Amino acid sequence: MRKKHVNEIFLLRSIACLSIVLLHSITWGTEHIRHLSKLPDGLLIVLDSLNVWLYYGTPAFIFITAFILGYSYKGREIQIKPFFLKRIQFILIPYLCMAVLYALPYVLISFEQFLIKVFLNSIIGDFHAYFVLIIFQFYVFFVLFKKWFDKHSPTFVIFGSLLINIIYLSIFNFTSPPNIWFSEYIWERYYWIPFPGWIFYFAVAYYFGSHYETLSRSLRRYKFGILVSSIITSSLLLYLYHSGLLTIHSSKRVDILFHTLTIVLLIFYFATKLKSIPIAFMMISKYSYGIYLLHTFYMAILILFLTLISINFGVLTIFILFLGSIFASISTIYFFNLFSFGKYIVGKVDINRDPIFQPNSNATVQSHQNVPIREK
Image 1 (cartoon, rainbow, N blue to C red):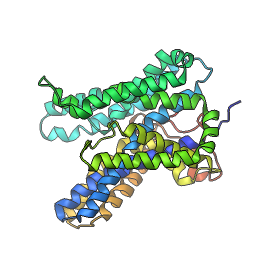
Image 2 (image 1 turned 90 degrees about the vertical axis):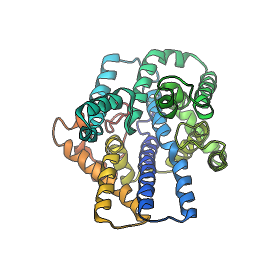
Image 3 (image 1 turned 45 degrees about the vertical axis):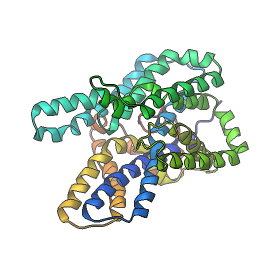
Image 4 (image 1 turned 180 degrees about the vertical axis):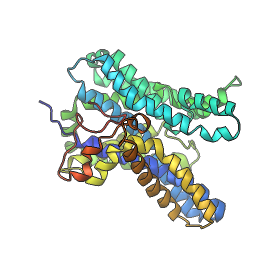
């Protein structure tokens, strides 16, 4: 039998979640600070570099999604109705609620603009939660092609998906939009949504999950290579960015494909060295979906508050946004889940099994929280 505990996933999920929140904290915080005072050029370069480095966060969630599908469904048939029902209830419906929430400021313009923004948010992912539309594409993809994935060589599928992914991203990374309707929007943002832009992560993670034991042995055997590779890909990423060869500020860069893979493997390796996941990481992992949905809402409130009080906290603004948005998000998720309807708004969290009250507990793929990247 396969082991029930997959600690690596919970550490990776929490770190990926924290990376996304920190990335947005740096972006929003730096912009706010620059309105009040001038930041040293050296500090701006460091913050900008860190921002680019943190772009592995969103692809890491794609990795987690596919890993758990591969791990949980190895040798199992998919029960299509319950498979999609629980994901629609606790992932898609909260996403749609957030699509409405983040469109509310447009009411100040007109009700028509509000409705248009709700449509854009919910249907084409025109806000930070676009990731949900990507994982639902992969849920459908998984149901349709699981047998094909299981039948074919992992090497063939992984390299084929890598080629598709590189070609797809290269089109938008290195070419200009044609002179046709909506092409600028597609080149600027919408190309993020279709699954070919993420298929390499899915293919690699699916086979890692279905061949988890082999992966664990390889991590221990090639630990030095993993460390060196992560340094090389990180250095290459920052070189391409600062040299001007690839200046896109997005996780949808060709070089992020390799950067994400090496960082994920590095986190996996460190997770295998831990006897149990620290409580703080377990907490973040458990609330990760709600944090993902809500953190920018609270960042906007914090920025408004800091603007009103007219106090310049300097670089501390970034930490205020980071810690404040996480704390406020977790509190909101906990509060909403006290009510039966709450899980349909902010995602489902079992507040009666909070890891902070179980310091010696080990979370499992089968019993952990209902977030968009877990399998029950």
